[in-house]
Image (cartoon, rainbow, N blue to C red):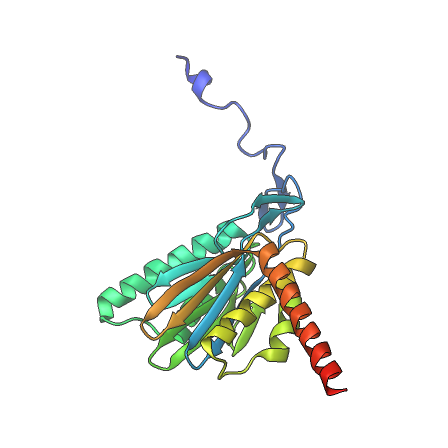
Amino acid sequence: MALQDVVSTRDPSQAPPWVQLSPGGPEFPRPFLLSHGTTTLAFRCSHGVVVAADTRSSCAGLVSDPASRKVITLHQHLLATTSGTSADCATWLRLLRSALRLRHLSEGRQLSVAGAAKLLALMLRGCAHKDLCVATLLCGWDHHGPGLHYVYSDGTRFSGDVLAVGSGSTYAYSVLDGTYRYDLPRAEAFWLARQAVAHAAHRDAYSGGNVDLYHVRPNGWVCVSREDLSQVYRGLEFRDEEDGDGGKDAHEETN
């Protein structure tokens, strides 16, 4: 085989036609607009952290996977939700899982939820201008109790009692803000999380599929359920109708 058959004859100083040069280096143009959206949420209660997320993965106008998992396990007492670019989220949370495992092996104890959020924020801060899209909720239980922290790909991080991320988050907040309280019983907390995701998926085109429900407790996380969102929303409508009929009957009896 001749050498010229295996070595490119293109001038290495000339960029290929599919690369656009810029002052900051080569840029690879996307073949189409990567629009994406989701609904992920979590809130702290006295009994733990309730985590819920839809399962629809979209790319522009295409539903690429109606049953993806947007809640990723980092260790027995820590979960992370994914919002943004799926590949970016999976890669950086895998790196975080490895870093937490090495820290556990070297120190003999798990990093706190706040410490894990700080570690991920520091890891992402070095790539703040690299066109990453990672927005995650770290939900766990440590020696401080239930912990909930938000981390974004530019290094932003903060904690809260109720957090929702994604294109459907505004719809989810409208449900959560009216009902949430820290001392919610477990059954009511689960119902609230499912209701918030169901309403968000009903209004947001990029959210849908199923709702995954997780609960992080003192002895670790547990996957509570996966339900079809259309069935959940119909169940909520049916429950509202029953409540309305009951109120009407009671009023008629009073009269």
